[in-house]
Length: 505
Ligand SMILES: Cc1cc2nc3c(=O)[nH]c(=O)nc-3n(C[C@H](O)[C@H](O)[C@H](O)COP(=O)(O)OP(=O)(O)OC[C@H]3O[C@@H](n4cnc5c(N)ncnc54)[C@H](O)[C@@H]3O)c2cc1C
Ligand SMILES: NC(=O)c1ccc[n+]([C@@H]2O[C@H](COP(=O)([O-])OP(=O)(O)OC[C@H]3O[C@@H](n4cnc5c(N)ncnc54)[C@H](OP(=O)(O)O)[C@@H]3O)[C@@H](O)[C@H]2O)c1
Ligand code: SF4
Ligand code: SF4
Image 1: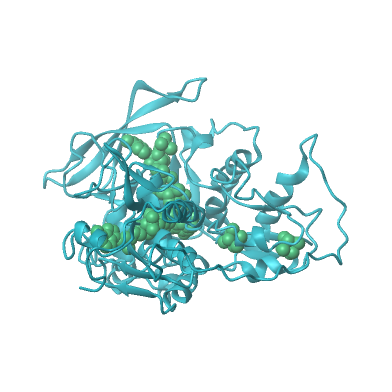
Image 2: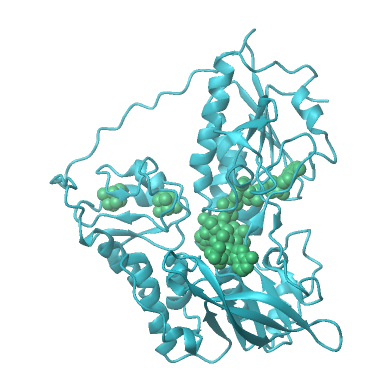
C-alpha cells in the first residue's frame, strides 16, 4: 500500500526532493504548487522506500497500512487524484529496487564581498519565513545573522497561530530550533524594530536587512455595529488560546449558547474546533491555562461558521475538513444550504461537498455542534440592552454563473452573544518602508523592496508581508529561497554597501 500525505502537511516540499522516483506532486516547479490544497503521492510509482517519511519535519506522511481510522480518507483522496491520468502524461515503469545515487553534498563556498570577510545580515521577525531565510543563508559559512523578534519567544505563528491540537504541525518548531542552534545566528528577543532599534540603524549595521514581520493585524468588518462589545477577531481569540503576550489578558463571553464565526477559512475551522472540542482532550496540549479554564466552563452549544460564497467555494482546505469531521467533531450544515450543496467536477471540491453531506446526516456525539452556513454576508451587528452584541443580521447571497457573489433582498437574523471575525490577516505599514495599502504588503520584486524611486538597495522582504496572508508554513520556504536568491545576485553584482556602523552597537 502506498504512502500518503495527511493533514499535518505544511507544504515545505522536503518530501518532494527526498523521493527517488519523483512521485509526489505538485512539485514547487509545477504551476499548481502554490494553489494546491495538498500534495499527492502517485500510488502507481511509489516504491514504499520511506525516504519522504524521514524528510518530513512534521510526520505528515504515513505508509498506507499504518493509517489510523480517522486518516483512511486521505488514501481515497490521494488515489482519486491519480485515478484519471492526463491523456499525455508520461508514466515510467519503476523498478522497486531502483534508487537515485546519492549526490555528493557540496558545501557552498563563502559569499564574495568586496574586501572579503563576513556578510552581515539583519532579519526582522522569527516566524517561518525568517527561519527559512536564515536556513538558506546559513549554508554560506561567512554569513552572520542577527535576528530581531519583538515577542519573548520565537517562531511567530508556528507557535502563536497553529492550533494547540495540531500537535504534528507544531513539530515544525523543532526544525526551527535546529536552525537557531547555528552559532552564526543570534536571535534577540523582546526587540522591536521601529521601537527599540530604528530601521535606519539596522541598515547602517548590515549589508542587508530582510523584513519578515508577517501580517500582524486582521481585516476588519466594515458594517454597522462592528465595534460593539462581543465582536472580536479570530486573531485575538487564537492569540488568547495560544498564550500570545498581546492577547493573553483578553476575555470572551462563552456563556452564550451560540458563537458566530464570520468567514470559513482554515483559521475559522481551527477556532470552531477548539470551541467545540472536549476541553480534557486539550488539557495536555500547549493551550493557555486561561483558555482551558474558560473552555471548561463554556456554555456554548453551537458554533455557526458562515461563508459569503457557496459551499463549493468555501475557503477551508480539504485536509482540514477531513481532520475536523473524521477527527470527531459534530458537524452539520444549515438545513436550507444542505439541499443546495450540489456537485462539483473537480475531485477536491466534490469530496468537500460529499463530506459535508455525510457529516450532516451522521449521528452527533453529545456536546457542541459546528453548523456551516453559506451564501450569507454580514450586514449589521444587533446590540442588546447592555450595549453588547445580541445578534447579527446577514444578507442572503446568490452565486452568479461567473462565480461572483450577488446579494439578494433577503436577510437572516441570528441570535448570538459572541461574533468572531475570521476574514483574513493584514500587514502593517512601517516607517521607512513603502506600503501597498490595498494589498497590505510591502511592494517588492522577487523580494527586493521597491519604493517610489525603484529597488531600495540592501532591503528585502519575505513571508506574509511580502506576498500577503495566504499559504501554509512551508510555502514560506520557497518564498524565502526566492528572496535569498535576489540578495545573492545583488551581492555578487556589487550592489550592496558594507556596514557603515559597527555591527554590534
Ligand atoms: C491562526 C493561524 C493558524 C495557522 N495554522 C497553520 C497550520 O496549522 N499549518 C500551516 O501550514 N500553516 C498555518 N498557518 C499559516 C502560517 O502560520 C503562516 O504561513 C506563517 O506563519 C507566515 O510566516 P511569516 O514568517 O511570514 O509570519 P509570522 O509567522 O507572523 O512571523 C512574523 C514574526 O515577526 C515578528 N515581528 C513583526 N514585526 C516585528 C518588528 N517590528 N520587530 C521585531 N519582530 C517583529 C512577529 O512577532 C512574528 O514573530 C496558520 C496561520 C494562522 C494565522
Ligand atoms: N491548518 C492549516 O493548514 C492552516 C490553518 C490556519 C490557517 N492556514 C492558512 O493561513 C491562511 C490564512 O487563513 P484565513 O482563514 O485567515 O484566511 P482565508 O483562507 O483567506 O479565509 C478568509 C475568509 O474570510 C472571508 N472574507 C473575507 N472578507 C470578508 C468579508 N468582508 N465579509 C465576509 N467574509 C469575508 C473569505 O471569503 P471569500 O473566500 O469569499 O473571500 C474567507 O472565507 C490561509 O492560507 C490558510 O490556509 C492554514
Ligand atoms: S515512500 Fe519513497 S517512493 Fe513513495 S513517495 Fe515516499 S519517497 Fe517516494
Ligand atoms: S510537510 Fe513537507 S515533507 Fe511533510 S508531507 Fe508536507 S510537503 Fe512533504
